[in-house]
Image 1: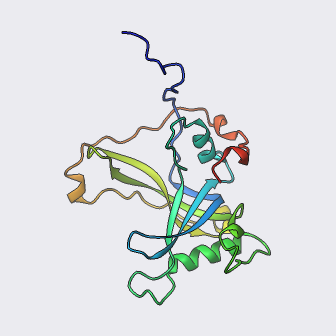
Image 2: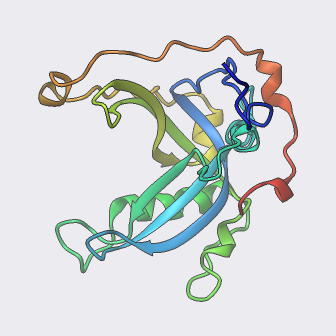
Image 3: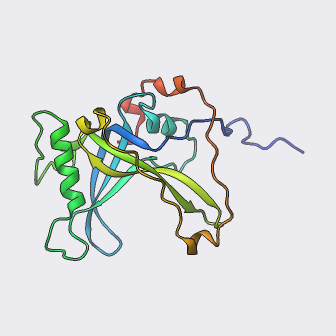
Length: 202
């Protein structure tokens, strides 16, 4: 076999530690106002871990990803209005706003112009859980995703339960080839690097 032309440029897969389900103090990297496919207002909130052994977890993953179409690895989608009554504010949106305000002393949301930018760099508590999904080949995998926003103090106090795994429903699972990801064996010290914001997509 001849050596592929781009062989020296391609980065192989290395061992890494999958983010465990749990409750984390996070930094808000960006907030984007957008609309859903059905035209409803929503926020796309990009996050990274701000404290503990997994600090800068997603920034490190971004830096090490050599793909041209790479995407930030931790995003949360929050609808602004209630699903059933679009004239009302959704509880998830209110929870996000109040959680950020409680987590940052002296901070209050800047409504109107500057709304998106006022969140950048602020802290917020986030509950993550493992969720099962199917890839395009209907193979089952697990990923750790942000689910609920909380105040930073509630995370640091350690009183919140870790959310249970969310498996596929039986109809979905019956079509899947079961293949759960195994934890990696990376040294946790790998996650202690300080990532320069200049290297990030925000």
